[in-house]
Length: 480
Ligand SMILES: Cc1cc2nc3c(=O)[nH]c(=O)nc-3n(C[C@H](O)[C@H](O)[C@H](O)COP(=O)(O)OP(=O)(O)OC[C@H]3O[C@@H](n4cnc5c(N)ncnc54)[C@H](O)[C@@H]3O)c2cc1C
Image (cartoon, rainbow, N blue to C red; front, side):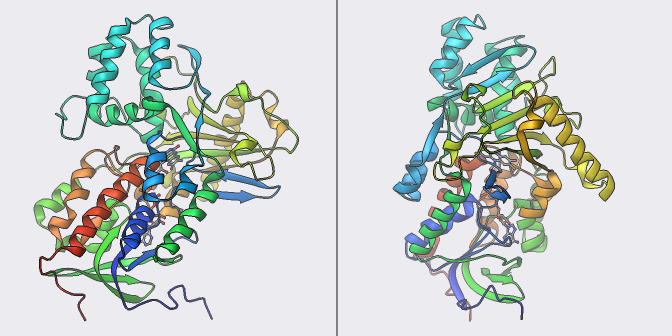
């Protein structure tokens, strides 16, 4: 008999969280800790969403999205998870750039960037300081008409080399382009510049297992292989969910599924105002990614001077559209030294990441798809050769992921790595006004994407759900 992943489930909960990405798990944890009856349903066979990993023979573990996040993650984990998780957050000190315009190593914080811009790029310190202050002063309620291109043009006119230095990592971090509102850049860039780039020591597997244990301690009922097919609503609001052929009642749903899937597939557009539906249709998905995972043979060392994160490119100029081009010229290499997993088997791994378009991969025949993946691997190894000489001899395992892979494991439409463009934030925030008890927490609007953005959005939404559940506004009891 097939296993029943809903065995022992209750007939009703206060809240059902759909999806175990960082936003979903954080919401579930906070709401469980507040004493609500919470059910977390994940369609995949493990928790974490895009914060994930996989293992390969020889003691190799690959992280998918553990490349770097701002210091704020430490505070958020301490407050909304626990001290043990927060204490594993450590700084990456060697951030390296190598392209036809410049080559440099930096700790990627305001102090170091100020020195670099002044000494290596010849910019007056006052201009640099004004730029940093402007970026840091941006917030969600600011005028959103200025684009990132205009912001750069204001402070560094005609300096495409500086634009490259300032934007390239953020484009990788969340798909930002020069055309996006400057606040999406300003907020994320300033978050990083506050104290540099951090990762989780112990690896994503350790983080997610500690988060799962914490959720269980807080009374959250956590389930894998539970694919929610419908959010049930009636004229009073959310009534429950349909999962693995069963109905479970609840007063609120936090969907961590893709925003557009939540509206159009899980709820159904007939339940929303036509104007809201139109707005939701206009929400653009962010781009997807390709990655190449490379495991180094046991005993082979990679010197730490190679860098932790390497933004490399052979393109003479910097254009955000080139970063998405099928003809890859720019890559981010993440080097994982044995210290990434101090208790592990002392392995080195390298992951190359590139932003990518879904359409370039979606409709390839199986044969063409396999050939394209192989080409991606070969061109990546060619590019790595400059930084790790004789790399083909040093690597014992290599494989690639594409937008199709990300879609397959997370159900994100078009394999979106970073949720939606900016307009998604307003639509996500508008859901509870449309349907009582319906919330979305997950990567949206560039600002709320990435590990820190997703966690912080989970916090914001869980506070709203908590107020709704505990308010005395005569909300209906769970329908019988
Ligand atoms: C290649 C790559 C590299 C990245 N690198 C970084 C990085 O270095 N730093 C950083 O900060 N961020 C990075 N990110 C982004 C970051 O991983 C994501 O923004 C973040 O993890 C998203 O969290 P989320 O809460 O939005 O949910 P997601 O991770 O998108 O998870 C959503 C979950 O919902 C589940 N789900 C969907 N539909 C259903 C359903 N119907 N029923 C049940 N479950 C469902 C999915 O299976 C999934 O587990 C990267 C992303 C990618 C793809």
